[in-house]
Length: 463
DNA sequence: AAAACGATCAACCGCCTTTAC
DNA sequence: CGTAAAGGCGGTTGATCGTTT
Image (cartoon, rainbow, N blue to C red):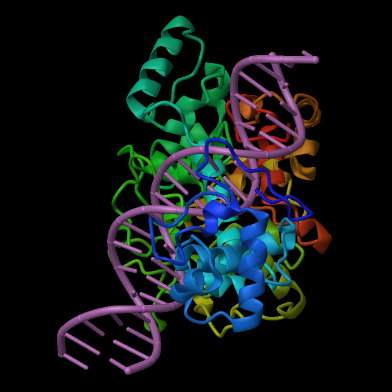
């Protein structure tokens, strides 16, 4: 590895050897190319050579420069480590956001993406992305559905007062994973959710959101996985994975290990806005976006959520776009800036949520919007609460359950098991348009940490 | 203080795609 | 159009370093 001064420790086990060895034989074409970490001598030779002769014909470089390396290795070393003005700094939150945007837009075209980050290499960006995906992957449930089911069943047998969910969603990984969630039966039965979910086609959308995942997953794998259990429809809108995956059938569950590098949402021109949902009979995002009305826009209560058909669906991007639109879209409620409009009758048919809504009212089935608001949102929203963990405790929640709020803040190592399941806050977005733009750049890793604290199973935390 | 652990990242391999001839 | 070279990418390994125990 290279330190700041360019010196590197030469590993013992790695196939490093002296510069004499490094250069020996290559000129005469003997032996296989050297592998392993580069020495500072090799770097100096390569740097000098490239500065003199340029970056052409890498295959000839080893011979001409006198290096016992393959041309490919020389090229990589130059591009990733030696090239002038390389930026080895860590990505800023803004850059991370931009990477997310670009990855969604361009796919794994790391070199293309790197073009927007002077000094950063595609490899470093890819490393960041892989790392991020790995962290998110770790956030997935530990137990398969069947095991989780057993756990829940045994748990409910041990404690008959613990409510079970009457619609048989014990396979719900989120639910099952959150093994400590125990809702007293009386309380559970009193929930409007419970009164309505049994017959509501929307409950499947609602419930995953009301059960905050024990561990974070920015890409909401959990939610999607919950949909694969058979109880819940595999609406790809729930899943960033599926949102990002224009190849995957929306009806196919994501099973097993997921590729760390997610396929992007990139699609052909003609597909733009259709989310590539060729196989899905479910509403496309643009139709979804037209249906979304949420407290996120309470600031402009007569407006619909301006979710562009052109954004990637990534929560970061949606939120980002929302912020952009905040300043530009204060008048139009029926047409997004990119020209997408929704029928007026649809607009009128959608109940509006007043800005200072008392969530208690949402619990009242007589309330005009009743509990349907959350399902409408969650069913058509490409992201959910877990995507915005910093909002898990917001003013509504705090107002509703300050104890919960304070407790959560105090007990970083506790999971979200004690969350008020009745709060639509977990399902309805709160993009908090008043949040200062600098907050927007919150590190996505910070989101994870903030949401789940130092969960022992959780994602990596700073040590 | 030292071992264990985990995160990060450089570097490699093999395959695929693009480009030049 | 076919072929070879160059470049790009995904997956993976292993070294290093910081943190925790």
